[in-house]
Amino acid sequence: MQKISAILLVVVLLCAISNGVLSFIDGILPNGQFEYGPKPHQMKGTRVIDPKAIPNWELTGFVEYIKSGQKQGDMLLVVPEGAFAVRLGEDASIKTKVKVTKGLFYSITFNVARTCAQEEKLNVSVSPNSEPHDWGILPMQTMYSSNGWDTYSWGFVAEASDIEISIHNPLTVEKDPACGPLIDSIALKALFPPRRTNQNMLKNGDFEEGPFVLPKTDVGGVLIPPNIEDDHSPLPGWMIESLKAVKYLDAEHFAIPKGKRAVELIAGKESAIAQVWSRRLQAKCMHFLSLWVMPTTLVRVI
Ligand SMILES: *[C@@H]1O[C@H](CO)[C@@H](O)[C@H](O)[C@H]1NC(C)=O
Image 1: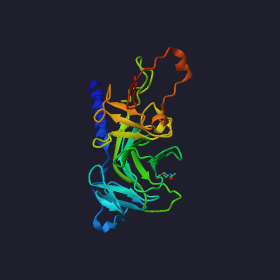
Image 2: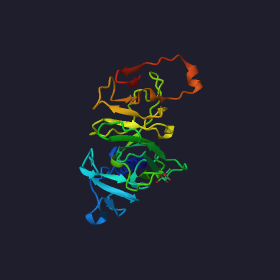
Image 3: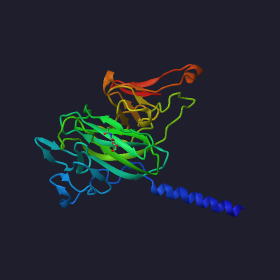
Image 4: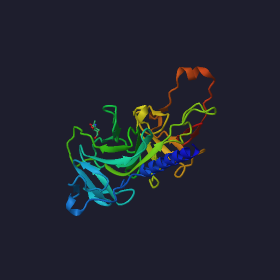
């Protein structure tokens, strides 16, 4: 009997190990910085004509492969990390397959630069997805950084261990197929939704659980888009209740009073984050809300 349980244990351990080896570990996705690109014969000018020309990615529509320093009219296109990025023309998309752990919550982080004056949006989605029409439309009207590149994030539950992540530049009324945002440095991170504790009635009150922060960004923050549903918030426990994004900061780039992460209400009065409490919870005890507020509008709830 003892022998059988020993064998069972070995089998269970092996399964656990092989699972760990196969699924994705937090960080930049394979070729997520687009440093490996198309061969010259797979391009026409800057446009990629073979949908499989960028390793690990599949392209649809008008996608350009952009080298840092390339000019567009008078504008110099500079890529923040590495030497290459992609540009999604109207209705174009890029997608990649990733092995993850089924049932876990993940957040995706990526860099975006606007290159046209028109209003731009990006549509992020993951398949399989049992919910119909369940994609994230992230508005890019406001530019928050000074170098032109902003980092965005979005969360989702992996419904399978093989998923496909897609970033799409949705159709707008204005018609310029070559117009569209530049994309670079796509990263993924598994998040473990924290619970309320005896010490803190707020979930994730210290914001330690949140999207992957790209190591080399000048701005050092990740935008959490407004108006996304709870189950797509990359900041577990919290909703962005305003029309403008908030910024997720790390201690490597900012002075944070406690822990490693904080939230900046970058749009001032137009920024709000919220956590919903049930009536039952509200009635249970007296509450004290204490929070760290930095003069730079850096806020931290404890
Ligand atoms: C968002 O992207 C998904 C996957 O590419 C697509 O099925 C869906 O129609 C897109 N939504 C919009 C509004 O363009």
